[in-house]
Image (cartoon, rainbow, N blue to C red; front, top):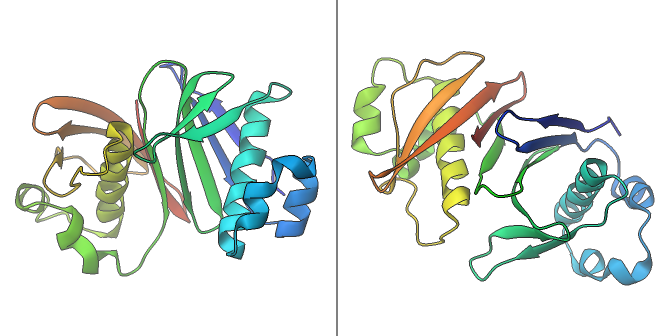
Length: 207
């Protein structure tokens, strides 16, 4: 398995990214946990879910090293860490899994491998103002950035009833290999984000 990419961001957040190329059996061996801590893993039926479960814990192990961690979820399904107490956001797509961790600030992250037909779902996540904003520059990269930005803000807010199309607005931006974005939640709360485009995926996260 390739080493995880772990970066400390200027705002104190930790960004971790892992490419899961190994088999489930190899990942389980690398995790090296005692059987009593693997009950949740063994209850999963999907090979994909098993790999994501292992990948997340391998990535967190790389971030916290020898320090123990306890991953939990609130009643809205939003993840958080105990021992140490940190905010965490998680995303996975294809063979990639990533996390954003901050000790005190609410955060959100999204990774998406390129989907050639993402434009078919445009009406599900972009509102009329956004479509008007980018009418002349609406390409595949821009659509992935919009999607990732909205997913990141949705995770930061942490409320299942949030509508990513109507409750979240992304201000116009210039598409490059990387850049900054500004989003708004319910027209009031301004949320800053960064994005990065690689040859395989688009990564967006709040700052």
